[in-house]
Length: 169
Image (tube, rainbow, N blue to C red):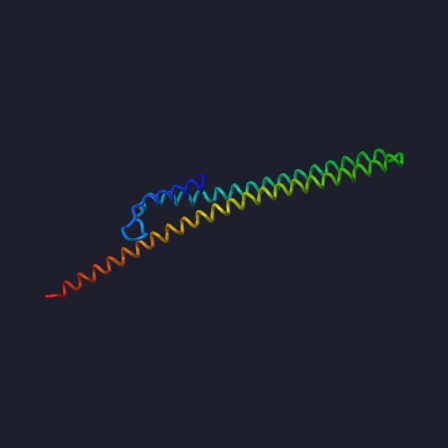
């Protein structure tokens, strides 16, 4: 499940909850938040696995490019060995192999750069999504903690009033 969708649902729950009068505190139904948090815990590793898969694909693409380069170089060397009978033909084959090698290296560099850029973009987006999700979660925790503290303060004040009332004859 998409982590941003879960974050949006959590935000809707918080926005849709009742606000306590004269405060910024909200009463949030825990039974609606906990399943979302569990789904987030499940979704985040999926996002990480997806990023790892992208990196593996990048590595595989680079390995394939290297294999292709080696194949092309081996082919060029083979052709050059067959043409060594004449000096000019051998020289032309060596130049062609060098050109092919340089071209292949440029292609490898371009593929590697593209794969790195893609992986970097995906990881940056994922980092932003995770930071946003973490901020939402931290805000929810602070809100819940503030609600608890406020409730505890009210209960303590109420107990003090009861204690004073019971002491009065």
